[in-house]
Image (cartoon, rainbow over all chains, first blue to last red):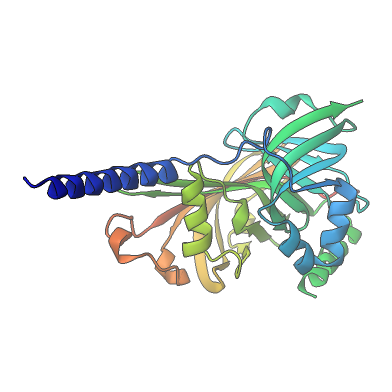
Length: 141
Length: 184
């Protein structure tokens, strides 16, 4: 075999292996660990809810898929299904809140009235602002 | 405008306070599809729903982006390639329990029901009918159902390479835990 054929084969092999590796990495990619990532926005639950209520389209464009660090007072803690817990944070509007879904049972120790800070990925606005993939940042007294 | 309309409806519901209406904002919708390579499973725990026990009317609303998948890539494909959630962010069901008389809301127990209505996914609305159950419990009402839909009915295109691998039917599981609307 001529040396340049060997080199060419080697290059092809490297490209193929890295292609497969890259595909595997993409395929197995996890969701960002919101307890560690830097938030795109830091905001209170009341201000966030108000922004969506006043101008949903603009707020959607600004916040959806971004990591938000939201602080507020817990209005309810609900054991949702499939091992998820929802925490609602009070806003200025009694009919609407910020609902944060956690994939762990850990937040179930919180109760209404607790002041907490949560980091999560914004999914948008239904009747409330919805955050997914949430993590507790800290509990404030 | 649409949101104010919804808020308006919601306000009317809240203002006409009586124990006839139940709601939840923490409802669950899951979907499941079996393929030859792996199972596709998405969970949404942020479903809003209202149930009027005097008429049997039910409304569900969910954000597509609230569906969560174990694999980040699957979630991305679900949103971008299949559901186009930037264009069609919400899914809505409006319907009615067709055999309401079979449920005694004053007596705790589990009752089998059939719900008929319009399901809107991906901006396509279809009439559906699903069997489910209503469980009357202390302080609330639980509703659950499991039924199948066909993605093609909602103009959700499945690429040729994977079409044969994905089951034509998609199984939806719905679990709602309603509480009376505050004020009683």
